[in-house]
Length: 280
Image (cartoon, rainbow, N blue to C red; front, side):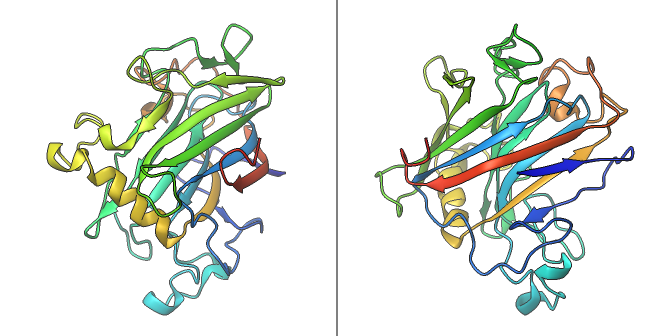
C-alpha cells in the first residue's frame, strides 16, 4: 500500500510516483498499460481527503527513460520527463493522459485526455456523478450509495470496439466494491454506466469540436495506450481552502466547501491489471 500525506498548505506543489519508489520517478523498464482490453482494480482510502484536495491515480505517456534520449533530460531516476495533457511548459512536454481517479471524499471524476497530431486535450471527456445530477451517489457518510468515509475498491474496465487488445478503445466501464457489495456507477445518459468515448459531446470536449468528438477521442486515447503508459499517483491542492479545486468539488461538480481537513492523506493499494474478469 502507498500512503501519500501532506504537511503544509501545498497549493500547486505535487508529488508523483511512477513505479513503486517514493519521492522520485523510478527508472522504467517497461510501461505498465500496453493493452487496450482489460481491467484495472485498486483499493482506495480518501477518508481524510477533504475539499480543495485531489487524490489522483492516472496513466501518462511519459517516455520510459524520462526524456533522456529525446530531450537530454537527466532521466526518470531524477524525476525528469514527466508529462501530461496540460499545456507544455519548459522541461515538461504534453502527452496523453488517462485519469482513472481524481477525487477527494466529496467528489470524484475519471477523464480521458487524448492527443492528436501533436496537440493534447487539457479539458478531457470526464464522468463526475455529481455533475451528472446524481448528488446522492458518492460522499461522506452512510447516506450515500458509496460512502467515502470507508475504504472501497474501484474497478475500471477498458472495452474495445472489437473485444481485442488491438482494437480502438470504445468505453471505460466503472463499478465499485464496498463491504463486499458491488455497486454500479451512476448511469450516464440514463442507461450506460460508462464513459462512451466516441459519443462525448462538444460541450464536454470543447478542444476537439463536433467533427472530431465522434471518433477523435477514441482514436486518440487508443494511440496513447498502444504506446504504453506509466502509472502515476499524487495528492495535491490546498487543504485549508475548500474552494481551491472548483473544477472537481465545487458546484456544479460537487458540494464543496463543506468539509476540510488540514492534515489530509490518501492511500492506494491492491493494484491489479489484467484481462477482464481476472482481477475480481
